Image (spheres, rainbow, N blue to C red):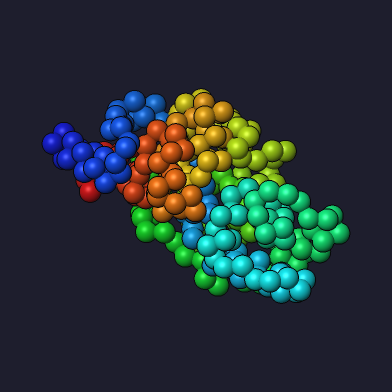
Length: 253
């Protein structure tokens, strides 16, 4: 990409997302050698299957269903928090322990049965991962979803072949927004945290990256929503994973 082309792309993007300061990618190009990606809302749109499993659980327990918009607002902190929020009908509070245990068993059973019925890849994911891998970058998926659900989804959509590491919400003692998963990822890859770029869509992704000392960019199509994602404090907003690869690797658009 020529300097003129790069200026045009960056200028257009800053106009598309008003309120964001233009971002200079040159520092990231100089230091980043590995990339970690969130799963739900970044690589895959898993909302339909999560909502189906959640509503099957609620029906089984004799509770009213919720719409996908409500489920969307509950995603991001792992399965246990999703189940708790579905049972109490909000982001705060906890259900009685016995109800939670029944809910977890039911949700996990229904989600296993319908894990990939309506889940879809976001545009630019496959090409973006392939571009990063071809350039020699180490790639990881760092998610709060349990590994038992994460690995089959990655395999079903052909993403596992591009990844060198998978860290689920139950892989380590703590999950995002704790910095441990990203620090562990950097350690496994043999790079400093500042050389590991986090690509996500939520506050947990940004908070984890900041605490770990990693740069972070967000996509606007995830479960935080376009308007909210601008306020998360990421270094930049990218259109999708391929856009992140183009900007970091200076590929033609």
